[in-house]
Image (spheres, rainbow, N blue to C red):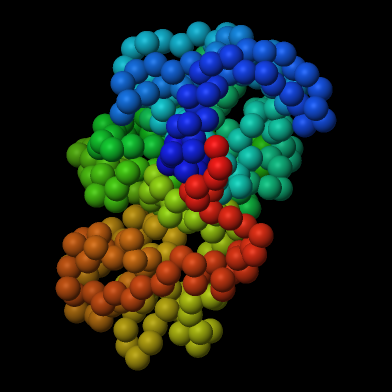
Length: 363
């Protein structure tokens, strides 16, 4: 709920929708009376689902909405096992973050992916496909365990992002499984978007420490090429809060990396070509890395480089990243903060008519 808006207002809404209500569409036509939602589980682990009597209302959203819902929910049947429940919650959190960032995820509004020929299927706007929809494309070849960690794939501005959600626990890693997943996504990206690779990942989680420990879990692999940061050279951490939603909104901009770097660095500072330290800018002999994209893999490579170099370094980060970056890199690196509001202003994302959905609204 905290990813969708005001928790207080949403809890009141859910309570009302657990009871029979009269519904009308936008034009005022009567849609009948039914329960919209059913709630189960304890307060801190609640599951909120559509009630079976509300399924016909999906037809009012889109002609294919009910069919798509039944396909993705197994005919409105849900397992009560903790593993299945928690996986559904991870996917739901991912969808909530996508919705807040303006990423389309409704399957009836997206063209279906395919693996028959190279053709431009992926829309020009940011689009998220759930892992379950990907699995249906290749169920005979792909081991089902490959999709237990992946929540889906995000296509945005000529980038294919593998999306994972660690929630509040370190995710157990399968090096070969993730390698096969990346190969599968690379083929989908080539066949449906004309992209040569799928080397970016989004790692959602409740805190950066959990995300980093999940990354480091892959270090236990005996094969270097199966490490998570080798499979995905760019791993961007998205916190499960409004700050993460703002960050994802930035990452789905056209040419987002160049836009961000141009907004925060003067052109004469910009780094050109590879150097001994991975960086985005240089000033007076100091290497400067931008962590405004939340890329943990680059941060890991910077720490490794500092073990063999005395070069002066700075990291540009958001205030909510500062404590983590300081703990991870130590005092060898200087830190400079940029607020996300200032960055959004520089990128032209400020909308005077936009209101923060976390604000309280009348019940």
